[in-house]
Image (cartoon, rainbow, N blue to C red; front, side):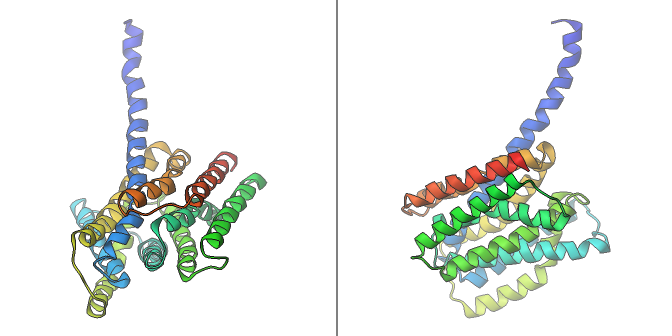
Amino acid sequence: MTAQNSATLPTTIAVKNPVRRGTALALLGVVAFSLTFPATAWGLESFGPWSLVALRSVLAAAIAGAFLLARRVPLPAREHWAGLAVVAAGVVVGFPMLTTLALTTSTTSHAAVVVGLLPLTTAALSALRTGARPSRAFWAAALAGAAVVIAFTLAQSGGALSAGDAYLFGALLVCAAGYTEGGRLARLLPGWQVIGWALVLCLPLSLAGSAVGLAYEPVHLGVHGLAGLVWAAAGSTFLGLYVWYRGMAEIGAPRASQLQLAQPLLTLVWSVALLGEHLSPAAPAAACAVLVCIAVTQRVK
């Protein structure tokens, strides 16, 4: 090895390592997110929907608060709190609550296909929020993805939207709003701090919701129920978002978004492996069609 080559070798390794580390972290985030619906379905075996969402938020806030205290993170500036409230309303409260209510009547595989539209919904709201003007090809692909999901939903629901579908479409909108505002704040604060402070902000509401929910909803503790609650809180709500934001900072949002294309398909795998659900041929076909539409938007926007 020449002196010149040996001098450039450390630089090459330094360039490659962050990419590999960031890709691994982002993939871990995608896996954590893909388990959210199966974990929620397990949690519903032990808790009512309101209790499950409130307890999930309390546990996640406790973990986030411990991290913030351990790192001695100062309070966000006053001008950031309104944005954090939007993140909290969309990601911490709205999306978990609406998807949990949906899963009381819908299968996880059905929910995975509908919520697979989330990247497109987020991109559309982000464009409206920032004033960006994506290309016509972007909007064509986004509308095609929406059409696939709507057709799948109507076919699975007998030609009309069910209450579960209404919850899922509402979850898409509130989560996309939370992601959009979270993305804006992540330019000003580390991403994990954004979700951490959003969780802490919701803690009083979560504690009150837990007390009310546990008082009025039956509780049947079991291994599945407790495992689902712990994973939904620690894995999906905090760990998933923590490693996702860290990975996205390393490799960039476009590359990370490509990895997230696998999330609906992974959820379909978990729904069969963990819950024993039987997939209709339409579910994986619709998920793959949405994946293609999202891939097109990533390339043309």
